[in-house]
Length: 319
Ligand SMILES: *[C@@H]1O[C@H](CO)[C@@H](O)[C@H](O)[C@H]1NC(C)=O
Ligand SMILES: *[C@@H]1O[C@H](CO)[C@@H](O)[C@H](O)[C@H]1NC(C)=O
Ligand SMILES: *[C@@H]1O[C@H](CO)[C@@H](O)[C@H](O)[C@H]1NC(C)=O
Image (cartoon, rainbow, N blue to C red):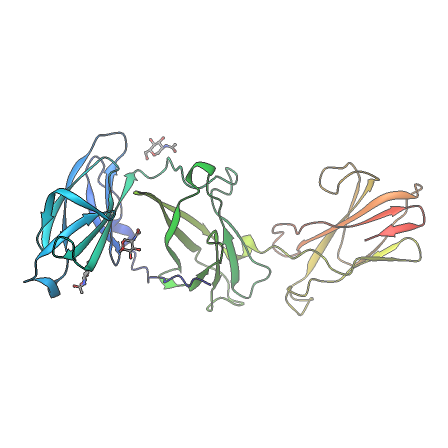
């Protein structure tokens, strides 16, 4: 599991507004400089690089993306010209063919950064990052999908915070999601949103994706377990194990739907009922149908769980 380092966000939000039509250079993290350039304007910017104080009196030579430069770039402190999106990984070496000493990656971020190309939009409402939590304990999971043409893109950094408090996250093994734990969370009224920023780059292009939400808006109960039938017409199910106890305090309500055989719970026509009970008696004439049930938080009317279903085919029932 790749552990992603998270930096405390000392976000001076006041000062973050960008001066348009002007390039700026900032250090995003160790070894990474971000050059912000105005969108739609051709740019050509000198960037200063330093190999490191430790090598002050050494013969320092630079390479870009592992290639020697011509003419050779020599010196502990140098300036490189970055045109358009032509950033790269500048490594400094001891002597023209000598050992690696240090490196600086120059990435380019367009300003404004709203014409993104690296991640797919999940939906206009949801944006590019989908987050969900199985309960209110503070554990949540976010995922994203790279566009096909940018499948080489790599996550550089993820920052997660709530009102200046850092939230620790771990990158998933497939690097297309994060698990986070907001330890300060449980049972307080949520006043501030959680904010997630994913910095991802494809070659030299850097994009930052931000998502802000209240935990209560992303809590989705897990699919209801133990759905079964008794007496030929009474269906019952359980609260998900991941849902919080006591149930009286964290109540769920259930939507029950009976759809014709061969239809799916999502799209099929059907009779819909709401209930707080974990059982429901079906009263239909047909002996073949699909019984569907899903849950939502009763008090917040938050998102619905996935459907659980039983297919009833005369005497034969599969749940
Ligand atoms: C390597 O470069 C970084 C800047 O990118 C600098 O902060 C660091 O001190 C350098 N390392 C050494 C050993 O000089
Ligand atoms: C840049 O090059 C250094 C040295 O080869 C390497 O350790 C580092 O991972 C590279 N970084 C990126 C973003 O390619
Ligand atoms: C991006 O932002 C600029 C200025 O903030 C705006 O004019 C433009 O319409 C936005 N483009 C998209 C695709 O959202």
